[in-house]
Image (cartoon, rainbow, N blue to C red):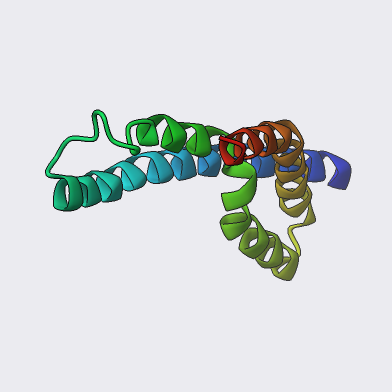
Length: 120
């Protein structure tokens, strides 16, 4: 019975992490767009066409998708500590598994993107 309960906890932990990734993606994308739009409006008069900042929106979208392996640490570490303290080891294992898979799949794409951006 405990193995079944732990399996359910692992599934719920991975599901929670997927939901938090989606929320983090939206926060980075829309929050970054709002901040960037305000800065562009203030410093450039509202248009980035023909300026060095023209590709900024694409770069932000790229970071929102592939940078999840970086910004997931903001919510994964506190959740792991919380579930460990509560004794909910299934949820803790699910969060760790999901975070590891996320870093494995998005980390190389993020590194390639950053390297190509720095070599321009």
